[in-house]
Amino acid sequence: MPSLVAEIGYAIESHLKHIGMIKPEPMTDRQKQFLAEKRREFEAHHGESESNAFPEKAVLCTKCSTKAMVLMDGCMTCLNCGESKCG
Image (cartoon, rainbow, N blue to C red):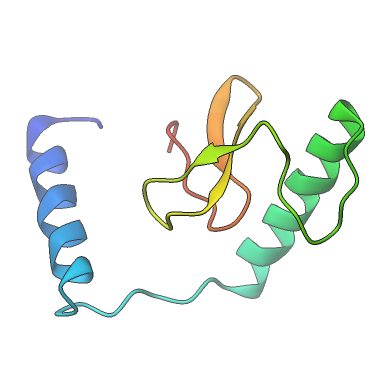
């Protein structure tokens, strides 16, 4: 996070989404396309090609609770929702 204030804001927003006061925004077509490209890139680099499953080495994403978080370009990125530790 860029600052403590941003971290606090993110925590409050996450909580409000979790309890249902804020509805999560659906992914745009551009975001879906970007994730599909990143997934193809990851599979080509690691030799995995199961179309419906996420890579075996993936870890649990804290945002969408899917085991789809992989290390790409030096950054943990979720292949399901696009969450990234690098922003």
